[in-house]
Amino acid sequence: MNTEVQTKERDAILVEDAGWIRVMGQPVLEALPSARAPYAQVDPFILVHEARGRLSPDFANTATKHLHRGFDNVLYMLEGSLSTGHSTGPGGAMERARLREGSLLVLRTGRGVWHADALGADEIQQGLAGTEFRIVLFWVNLARKDKQVEPSALVVEPQQIPMRKEGDAMVRALVGEGSPARLGTPALVLDIELPRGGEATTSVPPQFQGFAYVLEGEAAFGANRRRAKPAQLVVLGPGEAVTVRDATPRTRYLLMAGQPYGEAPRFNGPFVD
Image (cartoon, rainbow, N blue to C red):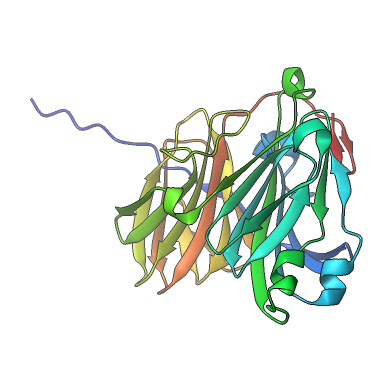
């Protein structure tokens, strides 16, 4: 007797455009938070921003240093290079990270950390004024029991990020699946690209909840095949896998999913208590 095991495919329950806001004077696409996707639906993810910029002395000399606490602050370099400072050195001293294309900074803000000091200053000193960069920034909540942990910073270089082929897609595991990056809760953050278009199915633990954020191209997401394009958030329903079909060439998206805490955080600007 043949036994066929079927995997329940997740639906796309919401497709929504990111909205334009200004952060530190710069235009930024904000996919989360979203009025149509309440935190309970995307727990443990709090915020998703995408930004493009051009390095300049004015940019590097702008007072961008600010304080965070209570979550993991993750910066992914999609294009270009960007240096930044954070107070995770001995005794709270500022230390710097140079993020090149494809690298990841995981900043555990814990009980409080200064962040984003002298953005791009290292590149300017090396004569790279005028070069462009593109980033995705996301915040992932910490459990209430972990809100007061010691801040820490980890830079994951591109060669440390596992890569695999999945259907027609190339998948980079930014978080989970062998990546050195770990969040406060079990999670997957995958950069998925379909160079020639086509289809890909990605397994996601059924206890996780999450979404896709489209960077390039266009595709049909989920069992119900809802189409999405760049700067759109695709919130996913329950299930064990996410399938993307009929993707145009060079479609690229981030798939973010994690085990929810089921706690109600208190949002206070850069603090999540």
